[in-house]
Image 1 (cartoon, rainbow, N blue to C red):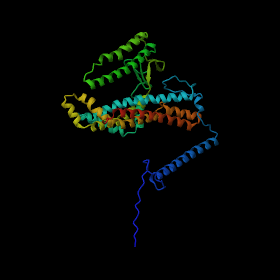
Image 2: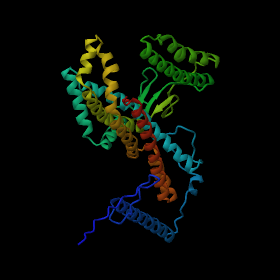
Image 3: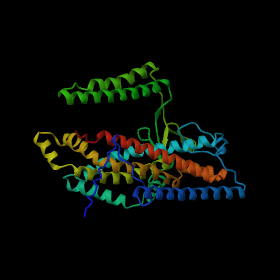
Image 4: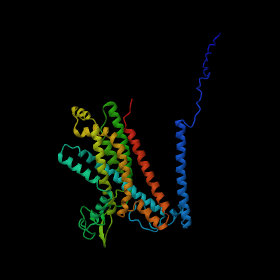
Length: 405
């Protein structure tokens, strides 16, 4: 009886070193993931198609014209505050541009003021002074828990109330400034090429001074020595603008506000509507920024502060050079959200009549009847503004991030 020995099967390797591909089935997790993504995408596209089709059908049934052709038509309404030239004969597109610039003005100034005030509040909440710490803590908790719309209306009520500010005919100038129910009037230089040249030179000088300061800091870090920036700073920020002003004719004329008839004319004015929306957004957002700054300062290890004190550094230098640079890595991400919230909350200015983008767009919608297009304009502008703000803050966050070796 003979027994057959099993034959050994040798595995033949791929002569080119390639591994054979595995057949994919519906039970593979990756295949199922793609299938579900396709299903969800199809559902979303179907919903979008239904909404668009239903909207267009209803608009056609009511003979409502669609499209953005209305942007080129004459607006026909006044705007109380403008940063650029505008008249009722201008187009709706220019009116919306005026509204956007007013919104940007509130957002930029509000972000700057809220940041400064919020940093001060956050530092004060950690002060060793018991009274200062309690006042700033109360400031944070009170303002964070009161709706921002109520704060804006409160500021507006104060600014237009006869109990707090007089009428134009009863106002008395203080250093050329007139504070009335219709706004705060203050003197400004009369328009002249000399002042324009000085402002342009000042802007260029500020950029040059920043570049020199950064180069000086890098030199200090590399060599431990760096020249003083006092003389270059005075030359760029004071000397150069003064020379440009002198060469432009050295204008000295000032436009003073004064009572003419029943109102005040001349100078420049800060309206109650603008002041109310700016104050309300600034103090409300500063409370949140103060809490963010406090959390960032607490996140810095105490050993950093103790080491700086052991080196003999002053408290102010420790805060600016040691604590804040490290705390910024914790502060910046949530700070971005507060900047975005302030910009979007500026739409509440419609409650006090400030002509921002939403207010102007509402007037445009009421006159043209094209609500969808007007809302689309508002959404696109706020989306673009938010994305630009987020991109800038993300760039800054990456710039100050720790670099691992």
